Length: 205
Image (cartoon, rainbow, N blue to C red; front, top):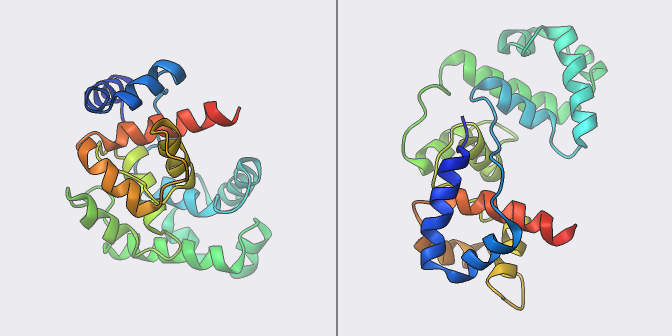
């Protein structure tokens, strides 16, 4: 699902009225394009596959996994696969443990991705039961796959650098500092996060 272009713009305009330095950054960098991932098991599994490797490498591993396990790499097939089979597809021992953790939680019903709690913190707590899915990965899933409008991945380095830049801070703010700063931007922090990544990439280009 993700946040639509209209929702992002509406959220940014609302926060821009409260924070003129954000409004100025939007004028300079422009509005961001939406980023939308499909909700569900496959997106979380692809998150695990893509950890600490390039986009191209992750795509190559995913292609091999689908060839071996079937389209979407069904949870039951992940559980049934032998270690060497998954290793041959490019999954390390650690990532195999993460993938099996996700598959087991899905198959047991302990993680129902169609019925995550509406409360963001409760949803993050459930998602982080999966080995290899930390707070940042859970937040990214809720923002880009579920389109939750108030997700704020304050632990993200680019978010910290980007916020520090458009607020004119001399040093990169800490995670706690930008959590505190962004309290005033609720319930549109997801839109600000998407803009901040966009602003950061404009900065470093």
